[in-house]
Length: 114
Image: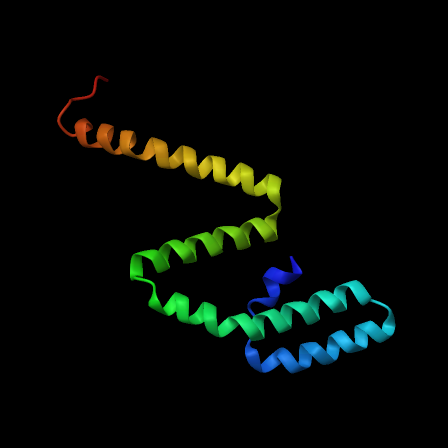
């Protein structure tokens, strides 16, 4: 979850994160500090490449990427079981939507019994 949240930090805050990671190393939180350091270095190195790839995508592919990122962020924040439950309801509603639309359109021409 920490790596997903680090992606939203602006590039101006990288130095501050490195200082915080250094302080965490001194305190004894080595695993979290090393995760922060590796993540910041990876974002600094690969950020321009990813930005160039995203800028070259057509609009429809960019929308798909944004939906995938949003769903993965929701999965990270809510947990796997909750996300699976929510995703199953969304898929069910997407499957059911054309039939509901069809019955709604046909309902205008077919009188209802009362």
